[in-house]
Length: 436
Image (cartoon, rainbow, N blue to C red; front, side):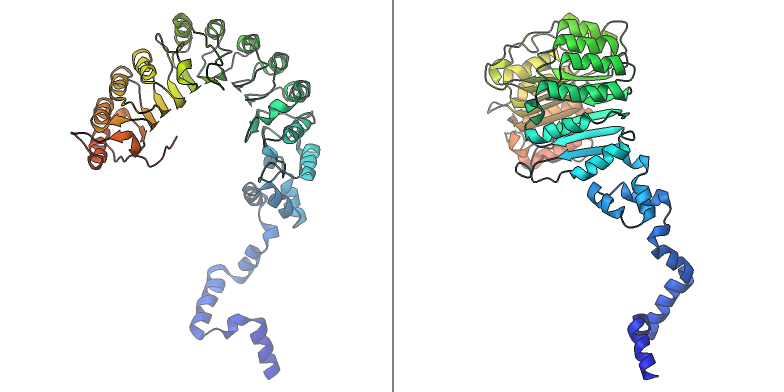
C-alpha cells in the first residue's frame, strides 16, 4: 500500500495539494469544462483548419515551415492556397546584412507548389548585387503566376541598379506577360526601360491602377506616355521630375483618361548644380486639375538651395510638399504666394533665419493646409502662435520640434503648449524629435 501511495503522489502531483487547492482545481477542470472537453483542448491536431490557418498567418516563414512538420493535418494547412496569396521574399547576404533571408529550399518549394497562388508579392533585398540577381532569378521562374501587386524594394542602396539591364528586363517581362491582372507595381530605382513598359501595357492595360517608378534612368517620357495613353484605369503615378513634361500632363488631362487621384514627383539632385531643372507651364498644371479636380500632387524635394530657381515662380497646384534638405526663406515665401491647394508641408531644415512672415503668408493663402512639420528651422513664439491662430482647428497634424521655437517678449516656451492647445481645440506639446 505504501508503494501504491508513493506511486500516486509521483504520477499525479495535483493530489499532493492542500484540500482547498484540490477543490478549486476540481471545479475548474471538472465542473467548468469537463474531462473530455479538456482532452480535446489539449489535442492541437483536432483544431479546425480555419483556426490553424489563422495561427499560421502570424508565423514567420521558417516557423511556419517547422510547424508544418508536426503532423499531417498541419502540413495540409501549410499548403492551403490562402496562405500563399501574400508573400515577401527576403534576400540578404550574410556579409552585407544582419537580416535573415528566406531559405533557398523554401523558395524552391514555394515556386514549385505555390507560384500560381501568389497574388501580392514583394522582394526585399539588401545592398548586394547578388541579392538583386537572386530576386531576378526568382521572377524569371514565375511563369504560372497571377500576381496582382508587385514590389521590388532595396533596403539600403539600390542594388537592382547593379543588375544588367537585359537580365532585369527579361525577368520582369516574365511577370508582365504571365500575370495579366497586375494592378499595383512598385519598381523604384530599377533598370526598367521603355520596352518593358510596353510589355506591361500590352498585357495589363485594363487592370493597372498604381505605378511607382521613381529614379528609373532608362525610362523616358515616351515610356510614361505609353502607360498614360493605354492604361485608362491608372489612379496613382510616381515618377522623377526629369520625366515630367507639359506633354505628359496634357496627355493625362485628355478626355480619354480617367481621373488621376495621386501624382507623386521626386525632385532629386545628387550634387550641387548637377541638374538644371526645367519649368512646367501653368497651363499644363491647370489642365490636369481641371480634368482631375481632386488629384493629390505630391512633391518630394532633395535639392540644394541654389537649385530651386525653377520652382513655384507661378501658381502650382501642389497639395503635399516635403523638403529633405535646407530650403531658403525666399522659396518658402513663393510657396505661400503660389500654392493655394497646399494641404501638407514638411520642412526638414532652413537655417537660422526666423520664418514668421513666411508661415503667416502660408496660413493666409493656403486655406486647405491641415498638416505642418518643421525640423531644423527657427520661428519666434509670437509668430508661431499667430500662424496657429490663423489656421485654427483645421491643423490636424502639427509637428514642431521644441528647438525650433524662439522665446520673445510675448511668449516663452512654458506658455506655448497651452496657447497653441487653445487655438487647436486639443492638447498639444512641441515634439522632442520629428515624427514624419
